[in-house]
Figure 1: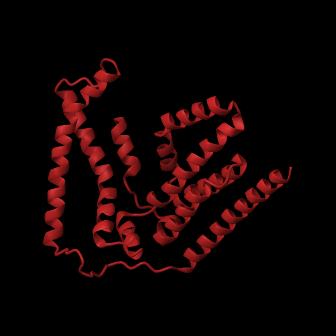
Figure 2: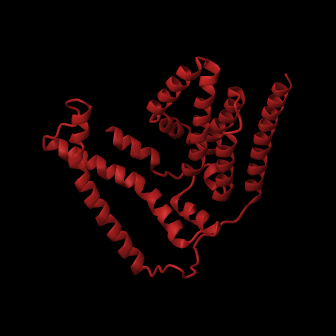
Amino acid sequence: MSVISRFSKVFLFEEKDALLFRLDPRIKLIKSIILMVIVFFIQDPIKIGILMATLLVEFKILGKVLFKVLRSILYLTPILILIIVANYLATYDIIDTLSPLLRFLLFVMAVDLFFFTTSPDDFSLTLEALRLPMTISLSFSLALRFIPTLSMELNDIIEAQISRGLQLDKGNILTRIRNYIPLLIPLIVLSIKRSIEVAEALEIRGLRPGVKRTSYKTLVLSGVDYAYIIISLIIIIAIYLLELKHLISLAKL
């Protein structure tokens, strides 16, 4: 299995019988946004590590997507190495190097919390619940659906071109980049063809911008949703207050 094929599998939504998949997507979106914001206000690697540990427990027990999350982080290895090297050269301090690295990982995990446990349909309903125009919510939903689709189509194109004698891993960096140019034209053609098919399907189903429509599924908050977000907020607020107390004590020195 090629790298692109494995990469596409990471972004392919897979429904699981787990609590995180049954939660209201608005609740997961709220928590993800809070985590993505709080990451800029916490400097202590230990406190960031605690937040990461709670998320890992959720992924393992409540979501059953821990392996998928770890794979998504693995694909970011070049970026992680760049962060480590750049920060160490700037500070020459291990603690100051770990802090931005862990903050980046926490940011990635917060994004995974929502997108790995939320179907494209629920994602569209969430955007509509936020009162976004239908054209915007539909565009984001379709984009989310087609990330794995385009990745798999690109993988098929690569395999077809290799069978015709195209060598992608030969030569220096510039040569390898040029070797990928023949892949762009069929990928663009397939993307345009698929977009036309989607547009025709939407037109056949009577989709009209600006016209209020009903949904087969409606989002309703349950007691489990409230319990989940309350417990999550307690943990996040407690860690933030500890960080704030630590910063105040340092300011008094």
